[in-house]
Image 1: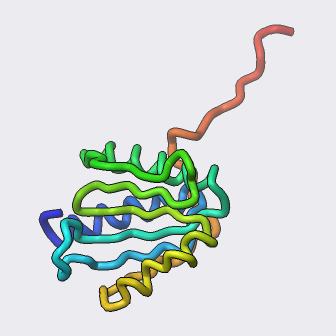
Image 2 (image 1 turned 135 degrees about the horizontal axis):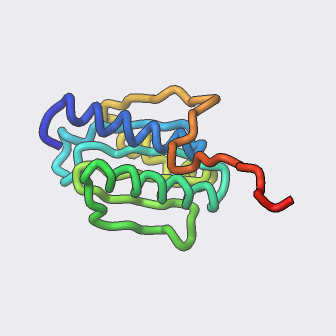
Length: 138
């Protein structure tokens, strides 16, 4: 990520994508001061494995639409912890039990963090909108 404003725009867009698939307890950890390859860890929870996959799919699609390329994906088939590596941004999607077990926030507790407010009602993205028209058959 090249600028702080670009970081914020990308982060906000990805968080919105997470919320659109009902991800919650979203936390961003600023990893830029550590000798790692990524700038940000973005961590979220989902109620079950199916929802984890739905969030991961939507984040991947949203990032691709912004011109980001997925470098690496892990855990998708099992679904309790899905990791999406976009080089500068790594997204972790957990079911609560797995998130609690690995406790990434505590492991990297010295990293600055930003917590995002959960959204009760998120407008659906246009991809999922549709209209029902009456049938011409009668």
